Length: 239
Image (cartoon, rainbow, N blue to C red; front, side, top):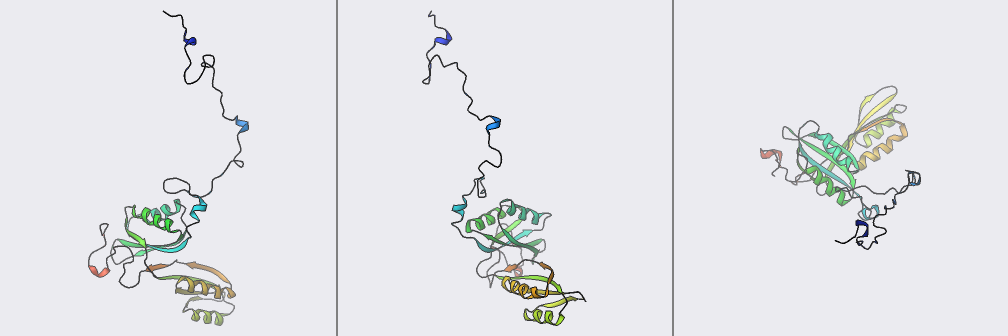
């Protein structure tokens, strides 16, 4: 037998026998040496669907644009909250969101206006399509027919002038009193914005906007694969 002891065995991995049993040095900073919350580096940019943070410089290469997305959904409790929650969790920019019935009982149409890059719009459509109540979803093709409704309550110091501006934008007075006048207007986004600018001279007390709703022009289906109401059968997940 040899007289080698465990301490006299050859060192491996390039170490020597003398330092084989030496404790390793802890390179971690002491609590007092760690940077505070305000001193730490904070990464910029949002995360993508895989949890990877997006370089804002790279994302800026895709210019954002305004898009109208239409979705046919089954009427289920909480479906609107699920759709809006999905989009907001991913930090997409929702400009407006409206919902209303369609020609099919039990189905509703969600119209969402977003300001996003093309990759962002594509991701919104893909993620919404994964939700069970969503039958069909897609960006409204081409130059969509869009319209929204706005109620404007203005001060009634000059009723004749308020009425004149209202007629200029095809509006109508829905309430009038000694202190305020409420006007209803409908039209596309540009018309509504211009009308609001014209009414500002009277002093806008309150305003309520529905946000745009939209349909595709001509025979083009508003949502991908959407069947016309005259088809006698509803659009399904398989269409």
